[in-house]
Length: 322
Image 1 (cartoon, rainbow, N blue to C red):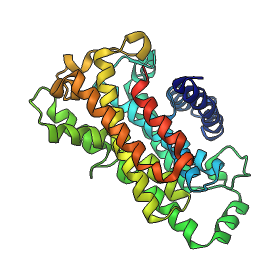
Image 2 (cartoon, helix red, strand yellow; image 1 turned 90 degrees about the horizontal axis):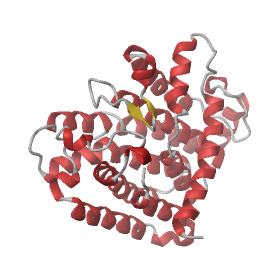
Image 3 (spheres, rainbow, N blue to C red; image 1 turned 60 degrees about the vertical axis):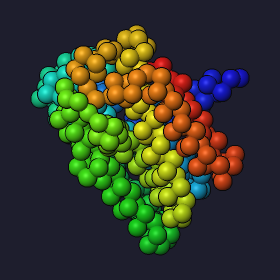
Image 4 (cartoon, rainbow, N blue to C red; image 1 turned 90 degrees about the vertical axis):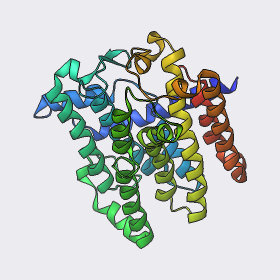
């Protein structure tokens, strides 16, 4: 089976497992008040590759992390990611009508509910992060953590508790104003319609998209209590694929199709957004992205075949069509 088909089959399998866990964690659509829960579920289950949870899972597995706990952490990542998409689509920001082939949240439910749905997903993400459960826990809601889980964590000593708090700090930092998602969004808005240099463009992409992908990789390693040397090594991988991912997105806006992407194409150019193809051209942007993926895979070579999935995911980022 060709590499692309192999990794796509694996990603589909893992995506289904992430969605099973998300189903347990999100409030039912009919739970009061139903309007907000319907909106939350509409966006979180609207499709998507679940790359961030899978990157977290694979990074943690590399260092012996528990798969169930890593998948739960990955679900928090997906909630944060979905919150960012809902808000990014709003008229005040990107003003998009379609996301993954469906009406965006504000088109489906109105702006006020969309804003609140994004807020609620962000809040639920940190509720999930703050209520760890054991790998045997089958309860749906994160606030219902079993005492046995707490006991199991306490048996592991302060290392588990410290790593848990460190993961929360890691993710909060990655979506904030100090080189994180919000910072990237702000500079992106301020740069629209203006001539942008390469340094500013790299900051936008590394902060707006790359920082959270980097955090997904780091948080998996941290949750698995990897050594500092190992955490720093996978950090390099995460930084490079995070930037490559956004460059690939820029290229898809130029070369992709509305049918494959499930949203309008060519908007970056129409809105005079700062992108790699606009600054460097398509071919040079492709070379830059390919170089980043190659370097990311080289970083993981000391781990041998154990890091194969992470390397395959890096290559998938370039080959994807949506």
